[in-house]
Amino acid sequence: MGLHQKQTELWVEPVNLGRRIPEDHFLRKLNKALDLGFLREEVAGFYGRNGNVSVDPVVIMKMMLLLFLDNVKSERELVKIIPLRIDYLWYLGYGLEDAVPDHSVLSKARARWGEEVFKRLFQVTVTKCLEAGLIDGSKLHMDSSLVRANASKNSIVEKACAEVLGKLDEAPAAQAGAHQGDDDNDKRPPNQRKQSTTDPDASMVRQGGGKSEPSYKNHRVVDDKEGVVTAVKTTTGMVNEAHELITLARQHEENTGCNAQVVVADCKYGIAENFVELASQKIRSHMGDFRARQNNPRQKGIFEYARFKYDKVTDTYICPARESLYRRHMDIRGNYEYITRAGVCSQCRLREQCTRSRTGRTLKRHVDQPLLDRARRQSHSKAAALDRKRRQHFQERNFADAANHHGFKRARWRGLVKQSIQDLLIAGLQNLRLLARKANILGAKSFLRRIATLIAEILHTWLAARLVPAMTA
Image 1 (tube, rainbow, N blue to C red):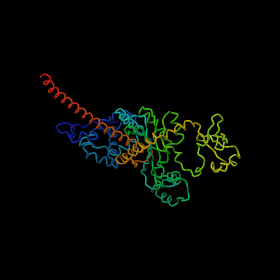
Image 2: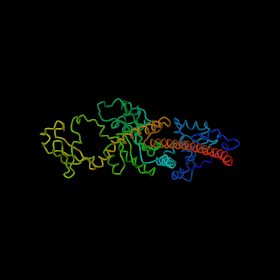
Image 3: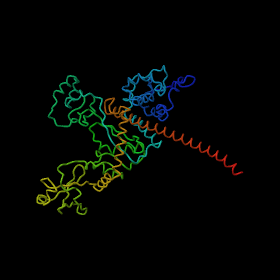
Image 4: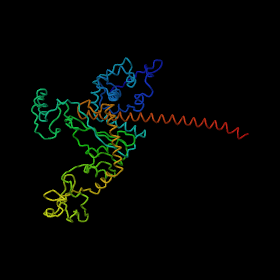
């Protein structure tokens, strides 16, 4: 493992090109806020003791940060830009005559280090924000966003054809035949029928009214205080975001050391399993209720669930016609089913207002129904509605910032692990930018406090000079 020796002749007197870099330049703040020295210990196990000396891992990581900081279009382009930018050379510790590492060094390092090194980097940025007082940790905002995979639409084939292509290695000829042989009558979702041959990890997802495209999905937790990203997970595009809520909440607690008290999310996350799990951990659910957003035409005009009264002693429900519904069995989602005895509903005078089923009205009750009811009441509160409006501001701004400044919406590399690395680097950079902005605010406040103190001292001296002679006279 190499250790880069910084070239200092350009950055000290009498010839100091570093003076050309403004004091408020972000790279100066980044260099001060983030010491990457820990990285050498993290990656030491990936290097041997003999052979060629590598490029310093710290330099490699700094180059990856620069790649996303200014959204440079490729690693080749970054290597071309570095010799032309004084600020880049200063940040990397290179002189004008130093050779910039080849672009392949970055891809080899990613493959060698794996995802865990970049998770550690992201955790360090969260810790820095925590130490600066930017994280409260008690209220979490959750959301997800699709990321377009680095794959052409021409690479999309039926999954059966993709398996053949992998075995026969006849991509060009087989691809053409695959598109001609698509079965238009196949009603399965695109993510079950098709995949990309260039990036098989990406799943086919339709967004809005467009066509299905190979995509990944980035899941994030944003802290309520300043909008710091505290947890990140990348999955294929077909993964249901509701199933990632508990995992993200635990990752937030591990990264920050803070226990979540409120979880804010839209109705996509508001399923019974999440409500019950959060309630069991005494976390308030300010999520939208997925059940309330469902529009089932078969339930329109019939008695609502609230019209049925549950009797805890007999474990039965009493319907508006004063008939009992008895527990039958549990389904795979942990719900008991309650139904009347045979023939009761068919002879009921309120049948038209109660059910449209031939077999009669059925109800479902979760095994942890009291917890579920409590969480749903929290989700329908006024405080929850206000928090969901605030979540829209936090999450939309966060994802928009990542897309506009760091190329978030399009994958640079192929494969789920590499996409996860990209998302971790972008989220870490956003945290560091927040940290730099906070340092500016604190610096301005400190300056104003010094000015106020100086003015107070001047006034005190002036008043003392005027009042003492007057009192003596």
